[in-house]
Image (cartoon, rainbow, N blue to C red; front, side, top):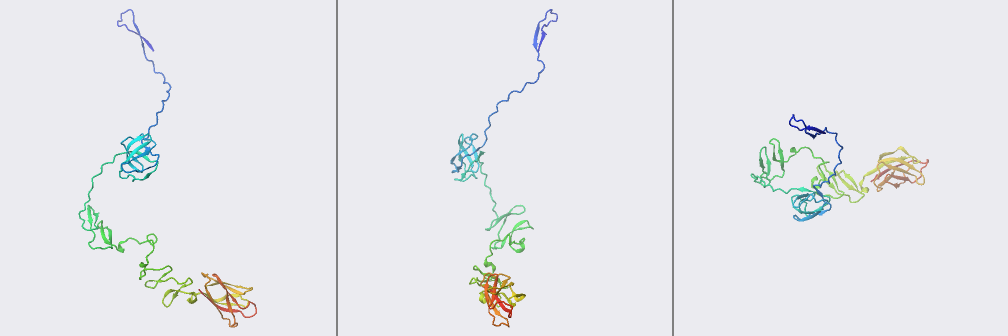
Length: 360
């Protein structure tokens, strides 16, 4: 606002000279916010990614890398290429970096195929190699000596002067050091698990008793003092028996083996009915049944089936009231066999009594 001031310096003057001075008034309310300025452009990443595969060349050779953006890199820079190693930038274009293989330790070998995309970042120059260290080899006198350490310093553990293949390195708890010691059962901790710590097959020579070889089908048995071998059978129908004279197993043929697979004595009525206890001295015989019709016969079921029908059935009539009785094998199966008489089942006449033996 404007204020008028008297400029006279003499208070006795009859006239006044006035001057108008502008004085700022009180601060008014804040004005409305102005329009936001325009956003700046996005910055450039300090890394790049390859967009094509390439193959590693010789150390010192230059490879052209196709990249999404070569702007962050300048000639002379050291770069690290993912999976390839350290390279030096030789030149660049918008989307190409020409880089020289520096051959640093860890760089991929020549002809290694590098896929894409692979990250490229700035790296540093390899530092100078450190000075070679030295190893104190004093105290070594014998081939096989090894370096160890006692409670305070490095020391040499010498092998024994005499060769002993039964010794190994053990920890000596009393002296807190490593020593050579003969391997003994007392020095081993725990047991060997045959299920988790042993694999493969035990060589036959390790069985003992001079056994060094075996053929398919051979059987090992214990003589009471050592292991022995029974060679495989000479024919497919032979069975493994036991010779009580030699106390050893042996292969025998069914016709001469004397191995009884089943046996018993059958007593039946004239109708052919076998009573519940009609078979005495039964071995390996289960249920029985009487079959009538064109061929009257009995079916005797094995408790344990045979592996084949190659068994022999011997029949003997033991009926004192019918000495001329003739019996025959009607059928043989793995589960049963059938016996037929030479007469029909009827209520007239005597019953049946006969013995049977089945050789396997």
